[in-house]
Length: 412
Image: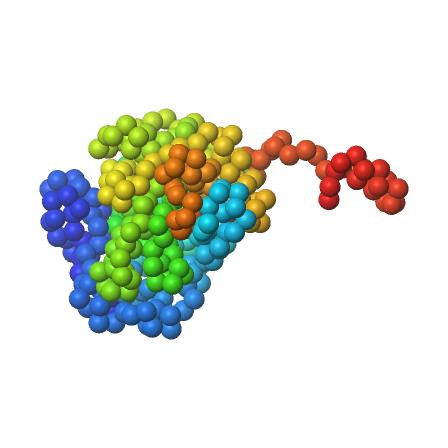
C-alpha cells in the first residue's frame, strides 16, 4: 500500500477521501494529495532511493499510488547534463540541463504525470482515459492507455504541430480536434467529464496526476549530489510543474534527504502567451487570462489552472518571471542545439532564451549553479524551424565539386 491519506483543499483545508475529485465542494479550491509523511520517513532514505529502479519509481513512497505502478515503469531518471558549452555562451560557470526530451515513452515530462494518472485510473476502475492537451499530454495519455489496455479519447485545439498529432494517433486513440484555444478545449472537457465516467487526467484525477511532476524535482536534487541549485528556470503552461518542483525540493528537505533549499525559481513563458510572467512583472497576486498567439504551442495556456500558485512559488523563492518573443524562442532552440547537441521543442527554446535574458538582467549571477528545464523533444515541433536554415549545398560526386563549394566559405 502507498502513503496517501486522502485529499485536502489547498484553500480551506477540508479533507476528502481518496476519490477521483479535484475541486473542494465548500470553497471551490483545488484539491491536493495528503501524504503520511511520518510513515514515508520510516521507509525512505538516500540509500533506499539509490537502490531503487533507474526511473521515477525510485521515489515511489512520495508518489500518490496505492499499489505498484501499472504503466511507465521506465519513465523518468532522465539525464542532468552539465552544459559547459552553453554555460560559456551564457557567461555562466555552472549550467545543467535537465533533459526530459529523452523521457520514455513519448519524449516529454508529461510521461511522469501520466504514469501516475493512468495507474490511478486503473486503481479507481475506469476503462477510459481522456484529456485536453496542447500536444505532449495527448501523446503520453494515448501511449500509456495503450500500455494499460484502456480506451482513450483525446481532445486538442485545431492547429497543433503535425508531429504531435501523428504521435498521438499512432497509439490507437480517438483523437478529436476542437476549433478554439486550449482553454476552450479544457472547458469542453470539463462538461464532458460531468456526463461520461472517464478518467480525465487533468480534471477529475488532476490532484494525483500533478504529483507525478515532483519526480522531476527529486531527480534534480539527487543528481546534483543531494542539493538543490541556486536557480531553476522552468517553462510555464498550466503552472503545475513549477509548483511541483518547488514542492519536491521542500519534501526532500523536510525528510532530511537534503540540508536546505536555497533556490530561486524562474518562470519562463513566450510573450505571445505570458499570463504568469506578466503578473509577476506587474506585481499582481494572480494572472489575467490571455488569448495565446505563439509558436510555443505546448505551453500556450492562456488561463493556467495553477497560475496563482505558480506566481506564489516564484515570489516565495525570490525568483522572477520573464518571457521571450517567437524569434527568441527559435534562437534558444538553436543555441541549445549548437552548444550541447540537444534538440528541444519550442518550450525548451523558451527556457534557454529566458535564461539568457535573466543573465543579461543580472537576475542570474555568473558564479551560481543554474538548472535549465528542457521538457520536450524538438522532433515534435519541426514546423517551428521551417525556413530558418539555408538549404544544404548540393555538389557532384567528385572532389573538385566539393573543393569548389568548400572554398566559397561553406563548412561541413
